[in-house]
Image (cartoon, rainbow, N blue to C red; front, side, top):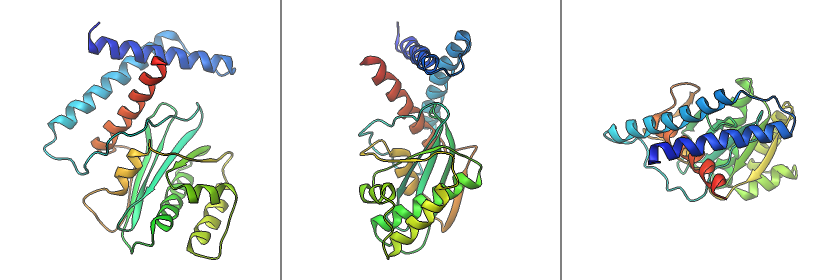
Length: 232
């Protein structure tokens, strides 16, 4: 098989393996032909995004090297990744269990309050966007260990971060399910959103027509995840 056929083959294997897992856990079964078409469509869309990225004269953000693989959430759950920026504000992205971007956003402007403050502020921005858009069951990942620990332990200190955590926990109480975890790497899309250019004060959300650079990196995350799991 050539590289094109190999990519489609591995993607089909992943869809069948995922369907097997859903069957074991008593989730609805899917037609095999539909799964095959979905797998081939994923690979072709990935290649189309690569081609479009190659044709672009310049990129609005410099791509971050892939240091660790992003992993999707379980079927029926959404994953929220967020990251604080270095000039005030940050970026957040919500993706489905298939790796598709459901909602992406950036918040820019204001003074830089320190890494943990900016992480907490960006998390609050992302979780508010999720609630206002009607999304539920978020699985939340970030690369700020101190913040994740405080959220897990409901640690509310008498400072700026404590105020953010109190507000975040209050919002999370409206979800049917929420979990927090620390991730060392695999946060590339949120990181690049946090450093989005051109820099403008204010907020920007995408639920459709997500910037091509973010789409290609999201596809690459899922492609790497599928390939690495099938190779094990």
